[in-house]
Image: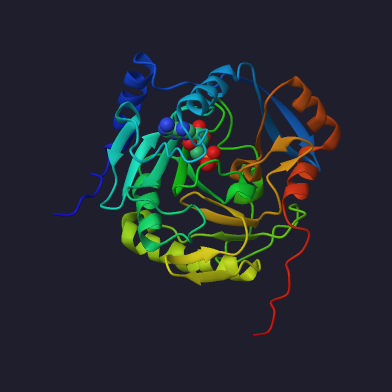
Length: 310
Ligand code: AMP
């Protein structure tokens, strides 16, 4: 019999698991304070870590006990039982992000090893939709180390909305909800770097298999339109370049990346909904001078490369 998450059960499992994981010390929350910065009339919320010690300590301990210095350690195979939230499908599990900045941050990981640079599949999108339709949330994917991925094992991510309690869904929400109602791939003028954005049809959440097929086809068109080639290898298809993918039940965004950092600040997919993270006050100061949109521009690509003729 195949496994599928029972509809309407994920939030409860997530809340219960979070509570037990905090109680036993498996979950190691990164404490932050936040501040809003604006550029070009758009709001960005910057989280500033107030204590990053625990994650660094764990890395140091791992480096001492592991002969590879921690480089080959895979935290998702096997996952920590105390962090495991649910079996989503035959191919995917949901875990708590061990070092969470955002409350109730889920990782949707493949049960068997697959590289993070492999292209997303029908099974990946189906697992994402089974979770995405459970509560207001944002799904995202850091496609490669230069797009912010710290782990090689394939993992999608899901954070509940609103991202900041008491505020709208996420800082750049107005930008993504005030677009024309048509469903084609669009470029949003306020974003000064190559990207592909599209509204999704209403009601996709009714059928995760159909929703996944629709999202998969759109994702492949977006890769194509932003110049990211799909390479065929012996172990399946791979991305030719790094990118971030973000989606809610209403829209999908794909942004090609050039690098992880600018001015010492690491950016992952959440940057493109206006949510940034810095390690300390100095990072915040750097960002005040640089401007958050300039940071996104720096780590995105300058232009879409023309496709080489075969
Ligand atoms: P990313 O850095 O975007 O690739 O996401 C991977 C996430 O995995 C990071 O945010 C880490 O906090 C998280 N992580 C690291 N070790 C573990 C672990 N043992 N269990 C669950 N999550 C982990």
